[in-house]
Image (tube, rainbow, N blue to C red):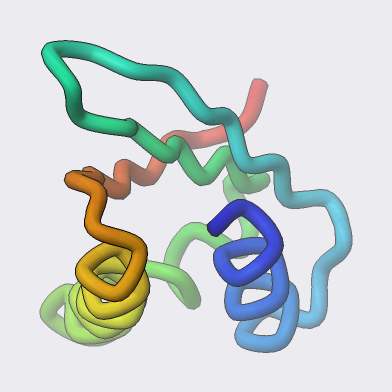
Length: 77
């Protein structure tokens, strides 16, 4: 899943400085996309459409793998 999210985000932004962190809470895998401030707008998209599409693709992959996931977006320090 991390490879999928990394591929999608780097292709959208053209920026390799994006990190994907994985953690687990209550049986749900949480993937946090950490991106620089200058590309956050590209990942969020107009009215949040891009991040919703990323979450939809990740959810489709999670269903295939029979897992529960959540995708979050965070500004990288």
